[in-house]
Image (cartoon, rainbow, N blue to C red; front, side, top):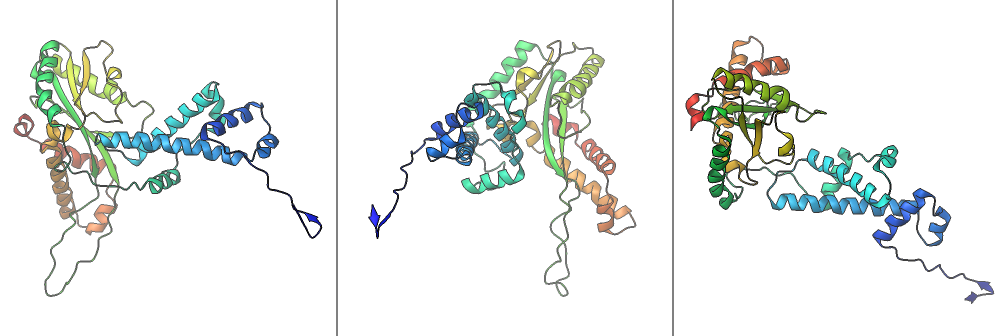
Length: 345
């Protein structure tokens, strides 16, 4: 086309690349089979390839998230981030045609920023999971007692050898969120700055209530099964031997995505093992959810209030100087307050 004696060049017609083609092009670019100039000639740049890979990861993570939530599985931000890193590693291996170790120099980290953008893109928000309102798998709840009885008979477990464990979060600084106030002098209570530090605590006890293991504080670990091998197994062996029983046991646990595969939670001799409760039945058939954990937290806060009252300092000062040793002592007192009759219910 010409205008006023000047030639106006036509824009290059560029190819519409699919996500699959972009990923294949990225692999060829990394292996040296294709140059960036070739890509630009086709209307594609390296950043577009990276975007294609990011989009594929985003879709994969959201698909996994949707599937898990369809089963009412509780999903935290940390679980999403870990799953994203796992899926990214899988995608790299699948599309590279090389060993995954080739990607170690450019290892993807699902940061807090990545998580926030992911949640915004898909409209994911945090909600409170209420045990009373979540729908249970009624059929699985009804069938499980018979299945459990079969497991117990097959393993010849005595009540002393059947254990249950569950974990809960404890905001160990928190006080009641309501207060008494003078009707004449205070129209509203001033806010108290809440310190929301939280511990995750694991509780374990056998069916008879005769063996209450000390509460275990759980954190991030390179060996996620260490609590089972170095804490639970030795304690159980010691107890059942004192009862003149065979050193074997069955531990019932929630079916949670964060837990290790059941086949990895077995003692070396195979006599102490784990059985998971059915999915989406925990709040209905998990023994700890029948008032034990709620009572523990109530006992803990009673012990905390007692400590505050006995201290000559202000409430704020007592809360601020509360250390983990204090928390463990208060927690032990609260756990001792869980009676035998409550466990046997």
